[in-house]
Image 1 (cartoon, rainbow, N blue to C red):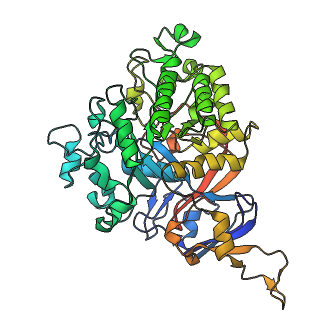
Image 2 (tube, rainbow, N blue to C red; image 1 turned 90 degrees about the vertical axis):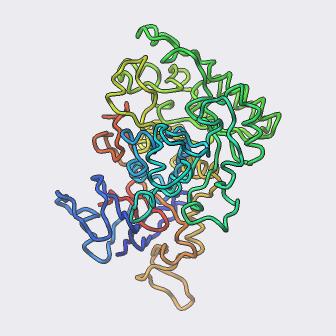
Image 3 (tube, rainbow, N blue to C red; image 1 turned 30 degrees about the vertical axis):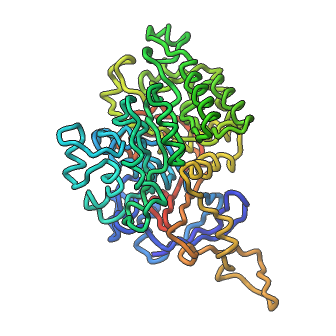
Length: 516
């Protein structure tokens, strides 16, 4: 089966081309907009749309779609996701998390290490929480298990998203003792690659973090030494507090809930900036949320220090006033901050202080979220509506361009993870050809303004091509019941947003589509 998208625009050059996608991903095949996985042998949805859907069109050998007004971009990447596997798969699994990622236009994610057991490189001990999943599959460490997830679960093919792994900064994420480099060095890219199998090569360890907790004073020197020796970035949860559940201010007082001061973030940011100055270690700050932290990061960057940072869609779209409307669905860590901090977050994105956008996709059950502000877990899911929310606030709001949003969600996150986003324009220049119905004069000039044709099946390395098809102006309403994630914990349900991923392509093969 082959798909041709006619008249699609390249995101960074605005050239309009025709794109040929040679087929669908093997194994699990295509995920459609209903959430069903369509295997290689076509399985139709129970209620196909009357006007004919993309899945329905697979009955034909060749599909052509008018993609006028759509944009072709490198696939999104998210260096901050929690898929809860192993140990808490009642919230999310690698399968459901990967489906959510594909639905959101993501082609690569970084799995955070707060799995159960923690992803610290240590051998898993019988009897500890989550151990049965790992040991029962025949693997000794969480890293081995996640690298070989498809094999461990006897899946016919790969998951519909690429993923890297992030190793713990401290053993068990307990903050008492730094992890041992010797226990996880072999999982890094470029280390003994000749002896690795395909799964190990595909899912390397590319960062260090105790995400969910800041690196503790007891382990700070040792963790920075680990990052220095390994050359991996330290991805820091830049916030620490002993008490409190929401941002300290008028809203916390109205709710009667203990507050978290804004300087709980700045203290970690300032500490780690000083340590980066001392060691030269690349520190990447997660989910920055306050004006004072952005100011400190600006100054560090101006000094030339190896500092990068991210924020998340919820910090640019919501302030702590959202707690009054959404309750614990808007409870997270760091907490939603003041309206002034929200505006400062947008300013930091617009002026380049923020290097990238990450979702901090954090699935929980609704029952857990209903426990009240003191007991409910922190976090929301974000992969499936991130682009729409960010586009609505940032692009429609006039703060940044469509092109800049794609850079923040694709190019920069891939770079942090040690990868390069697919260069669509370079592929067009190197491998495109005149469309078959073009007319060519004797001197070889193509006339009638026909589009150049890029056939992904004919590029030098089709396995390396990861793309997303975007309807940048499509208006839609977020409905968590349509999500592919197992979880529904989001305050964005019912939001009217613009900008939607319509298709996700990994290795030149379609893994998700809501194209019509």
